[in-house]
Amino acid sequence: MNILELNDITKDYGSVKALKNVDMTLSNGEWLAIMGPSGSGKTTMMNIVGCMDKPTSGTVMLDGTNISEVSAKNLTNIRRDKIGLIFQQFHLIGYLTALENIMVAQYYHSMPDEGEALKALERVGLRERAKHLPSQLSGGEQQRVCIARALINYPMLILADEPTGNLDETNEQIVMDIFRQLHRDGSSIIVVTHDPEIAEEAERTVVLEHGKVTRNTKNAVAGSRGGDEKNV
Image (cartoon, rainbow, N blue to C red; front, side, top):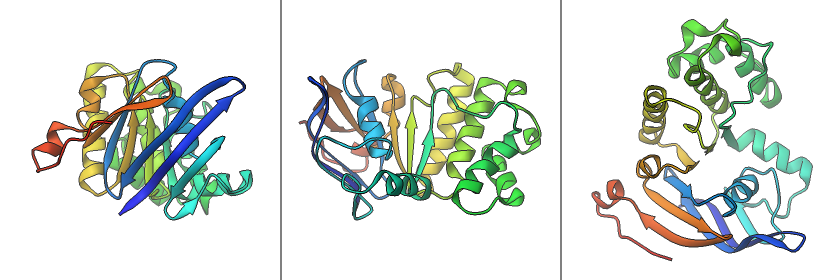
């Protein structure tokens, strides 16, 4: 069952076509990597899937809803309720502790719950850092807080933009271990990355070039379970 379907998506910025007739799907529980050079349309696609922008034409179905037709207010509600966003730049609030940054996400969703927020931090191995400000955390720890914040409202889709782009090798592996566990737990994940080794962790890789899908391929880890390779 597909939880996400992009059908003939085009996005224009004036005379510039950021996306050109893009088709893409994500099945429930699948881990998908999106790759491509700068200017290929990755960020535009992420913004559309993440309910932060709308396509010029085409349809985007998320959990049975055509999100390309809903109002800006409803897009915000869908993003809040169904999508967990993980950013390369973290976007943590500097004067709030790790725990409070997570509880802010709860506040905009329903009701802050300190116990649940602590469990989210524990899930990423940072319960003991709950009272620390972002400036008192390493880059890897800040990214793990960002992951905990994305997970706190139990999203149906985790959307990560270069989640290891600012991390050293040790912290990269810690973060990737978390993604592997999320995948084992059945989470649906889309990761945008420039790193082929990160992309290979996913079940499938979609490559964008000049706004078009040029490759849609099952990865070796998926192939070892009997998946078929498809090139577009």
